[in-house]
Length: 104
Image 1 (cartoon, rainbow, N blue to C red):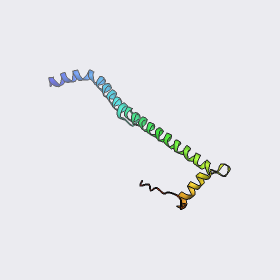
Image 2 (image 1 turned 120 degrees about the vertical axis):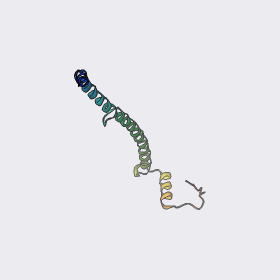
Image 3 (image 1 turned 180 degrees about the vertical axis):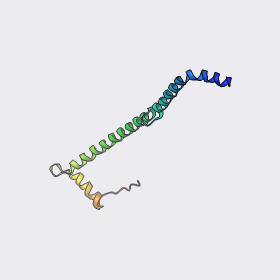
Image 4 (image 1 turned 30 degrees about the vertical axis):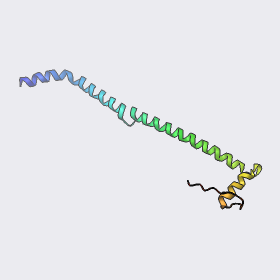
């Protein structure tokens, strides 16, 4: 019994610091690994960078397509572009054309 009393006297003043240390460890773990922790923030930052790069590529593609569409508008019609699109859509070729197969 004397041993338990000694242990009890030693643990009683340590209870509050141990609880505080446990709470601090809990908060620190969730600050790093939680849903809104540092690791989640890092993964989200990488995803944002990838999405921005994809947005840049897509914006470039849209710009190129807009230029091609503008060449087909009636007010500034490019006859070469129109001829290219007609041949591609209708699969037509002039008998004097030289055809090169593309194996893509």
